[in-house]
Image (tube, rainbow, N blue to C red):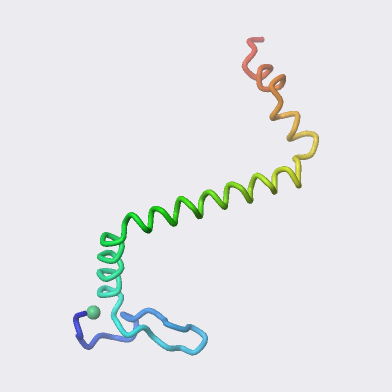
Length: 88
Ligand SMILES: [Zn+2]
């Protein structure tokens, strides 16, 4: 960490409601985060794969719970898809 004296805006909020700032400047924080990512890349990727998998499962459940209304369903049907590519 640089330890330099910098303007307040160079420090991100720790708690915006309380108006408190982070201890390290944005530049040092970014460098730290980047280094942490590179040192723990596999773990970050593993967590992201899990997060996306959950998201997909949730979305699939939402699709089943809220099927599209008739016009959208018609748009998605094989028949109308073929019709759009049929020559006049
Ligand atoms: Zn710094």
